[in-house]
Length: 128
Image (cartoon, rainbow, N blue to C red; front, top):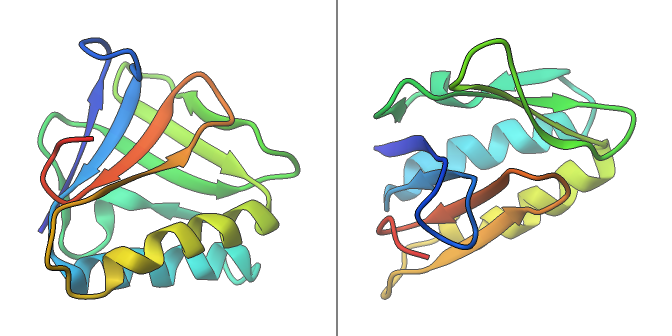
């Protein structure tokens, strides 16, 4: 199981969206959906609706294939976000997720979005 949540403050990296957990099979599902965006097979993916991913605080993150790299934009509620990137950048994100799709001996993290004001971090243990 992976958790997605939004951290407004508390670190120099904030605001950020954190995807946390160590479930390799769920990372593989997330990776596959991001690859679909990169390949143009889908226009949008609701991250928290992928099997094995839930939100601990009501955060909703939709990954969107976009004409330019806008990054994460706030939606119409406090915990609703759209992550807007080009196909090529989604391909880069998929590559950054690949290490999380393999069994790991140690905890780790990766910043996978830095284009906008809101960062996205993937972490196996919640820390980065």
